[in-house]
Length: 151
Image (cartoon, rainbow, N blue to C red):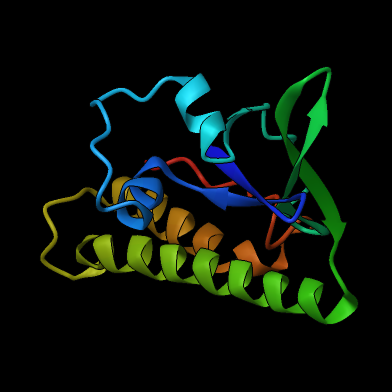
């Protein structure tokens, strides 16, 4: 990742953009940092993405800042609004319900009269399927779901 300084302000910029913006210039395959600097382009030192709670936060990449002569990537953890939290909860619930529906569909065969299962096996599958149906009632739904074990 690189930045270009424009009127003293850093903006994301790629080597590809440098080549495009300077079509009459022949650059080597690997452009040195000193050559990039001649064009106001500087490498950005990447930093580790911080962990966020996806229920209540989102991660945004900030504008790189100059630290000890090196441009350094910045991250911002942003608290979600109540509306954003509600939307994320709803989307997560929809995703969990879709997974549950797929698991139920995959096991429909266990409940037909001519399934090659004993009565005990059918009962175990029926209990598994009921546990799947009960997932939305779990205390941690939709973020902390405990999936039942397949018989």
